[in-house]
Length: 559
Image (cartoon, rainbow, N blue to C red):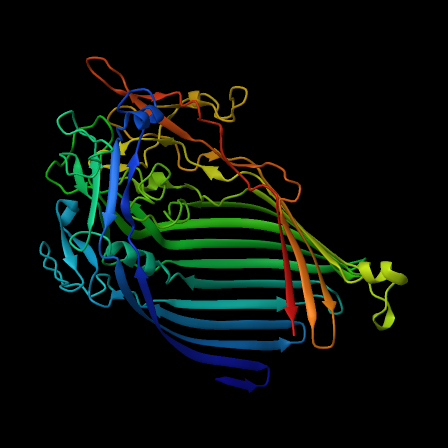
């Protein structure tokens, strides 16, 4: 509905969506092995050659899933044009996305006793906890209907007749997309499917490639649980920008942007304990990931953009951004929501907290944090004469006209990376997210050919968690240069031929995108064996590069 009165342009409305997500997939049906050098005491590769993994995971069953979700919202906005030089746009929105259900009730959560002393499966088809006696909804997550999102924006020209424009705004935005990844994990666990973590235990029950998924004394069920009172996260954003026109068709814009995230996703391993420590609760259930909504984040950024308007066929823009982002959110600080399965329980899974009793220790730089970033775009289109003719006569003019060349350059400082101590978390059979101890040596005083110093880290002390910070290593600087060339050929009045050539990494310049930050634990063969960090020969070397140059040509006939 729209209503116009005086200086007010009011818009109000409502939406309803019924969403269906149908899957035919399994998280880890073929299984995964993890080698870390523990078996041979030399290296992870030696363990691989010997056919003795340290850990295996497998998850299969309940392949077909039929998720359902209803989404509602109400909104109202007033575009209030107070004066020719001042406009205020204010509104409010209520949004509610119901937790997902499964068509046949095939979801599993864990009914958790006080202090995680015991857990028991609870199904969507029978949502009553056997331990606590609580009755859950069929989604096994209680709804969060408090999604109120106010927002306001202001545009002001402080000096009449001047090109200076000041813009400011504030808004709240909910993240209702968290339920889908949660539902996928709730559908892939016992008793609906088989999911196991198998830990190498002793010579009486060795773990080999031949029997890597058979139950052993070190086997734990691979589980996932979510807080039934899980709340939907939201972000508050505020922004201030000043824009002004400059001579030579230039325009400059300075912007400040702040974002505060609340109720972010956090994940941890209940009843886990450090290497060398005694199990504080042998009778307690462990080996499962628990998801809550207690994380938070903050990001501050300032940017300066210089843009040249299209003139004589040429336009360009350059923007420099200085920013910093900090969080203890497993999605922002990790690699996204961690799936319980082979794709997640590996060495590079910072999405799970190291110490489940000290989640604040996970506070650090966000994985996407990039202190300095420069984006530059340039575009030039060759000219055309009056009436569609060419600027040059003859065939040269017909060949050169109407080509558009576009170049894009992105350069920035490195992204954060986490030092990893590759071993299973006690009481879980899950690899990672262990971190080593930090020494007094410089991280970047590396040997020739390396970029990180392994002497900057040591094995965590027995019975304690490593004190290295999450995302405490700065990765390699980034650079990309892509370009494209395009033109439309007008064959007849009805037929047009579009030709385009796209190039990525046009200079074919090698850029390292990440370092190897893994230290391997090696078991010493002495009467009282302890774990010490191996000087991983790959530590501090590049672990990945950008893609090589590629060209793609596209021709499209339009009629």
